[in-house]
Amino acid sequence: MLESLSVIKDALPYLLKGSFATGVIVVGAMLIGLALGLLMACGMVYGRKWVRLVVGFYIWFFQGVPVLVLLFLFYFGLFNFLGLNFTAITAVTIVLGMTTAAYQANIFRGAMLSIPQGQFKAANALGMSNVQAITNIILPQVLRISIPAWSNEFSIILKDSALAFVIGAPEIMARTQFVASRTYQHLPLYITAGLIYFVLTWSGVKGLRALENKVRIPGYSHQGN
Amino acid sequence: MSRSEPILKVENITKSFGSAEILKGVGLELPKGAIKILIGPSGGGKSTLLQCLNCLVTPDSGTIWFNGGVVNIQKSKELYAFRQQVGMIFQDFNLFDHLTALDNIIIALCKVKKMSKQQARERAMTELDQVGLGDKGHLYPAELSGGQKQRVAIARALAMDPKVLLLDEPTSALDPELVGEVVAVIRSLAHKGMTMIMATHQISLIRNLADEILFMKDGLIAERGTPDELLGKGCGTLSQGFCDKLNEIAGEES
Image 1 (cartoon, each protein chain N blue to C red):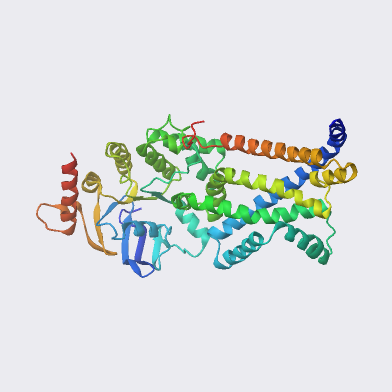
Image 2: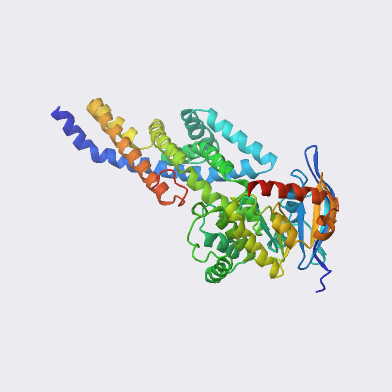
């Protein structure tokens, strides 16, 4: 018992450093997903037929293939083939970013479809171009509506980032495994790792909830706060 | 400019949705200061016609003249510039839900007219005052009543200095007791000489404001004339029959 505690105490700073790598991966992936997802959602809702086809294929592919397979496919396959010398962290960030983009695209698409079409018409009628109508009128509302679903996606990606250890990115899971294989204190160490993930997820989701409340449109609330 | 010179003129507008032919070649002229009122049974094409006038719905064929020149609706820039000068009021207001009443007006002034924030704010306040909502600028659409929303929508359109105003059933989505405030605003616009074309079922607007009534049915203008010509006692027109029916309903309610 005491031995376990001292192992945890010794390993904790090392594991917490791993949460920094995890943080970089998750924030990077979510931002890639945000940018790419918004772009694809616009393409799906407002784009021409060929745009819809291309985006549809992208989503179909990334939704259909397991993240682990994608990781191997890109890291050992495509990136190597293209001569791109990415670090493990960069590679994971890109792959997770492209994966979450497919899911985020659908989140944003759903939100776009829920905005009354009349507002787009009203923006057009005032002389706004389609791009102006989308950026000034549609997207600000879409982003607000999407926060709850986006926070789901955040917690999924945060936990999926643990897969990065298989290609050797020095994040929480990889570091835990490293220490565990040396000390044989598997149970206490993986409980610690689980708790770190739990705290990260919880604070991220909590933060997004706070953001959701902060940007809520007055008079629109179902919660009264 | 002589009163007879049309600001907005369309010829032979057609529009089909799938196999349904909604407009079958409609033409009309809107001289400066004129007020034309579209009436007729629903499904007759009134809304579609209004939305074709500023190309929110792209007509299948037809020509649009504005201020004497043909509008090339294939060119986005020209189309956007044209729409800036044609205000539109919708049945369901279509305010931007994420913006306050004031910002609803400011946003187009800043983004389309490229006004400074300060100038835009002053202009927006003036317009809100005009429709009697000077003290409601900070409220969001969800915090306004239907009548107030429609008045904000009117203020938003007027802030762009439109040469023509298209009104698509501006009072139809309102509770009966809120209709009055919007009618009053529209009336005052009429007195100021605003050029308007309006689809409406509001009998008081039809009778008192219209220079000309256009009765639309099955995608065509079936009758046109002054209120006296079409609604005079015993003239037996389609328009009269239609207005009698509206009166009947209004009578039953009151």
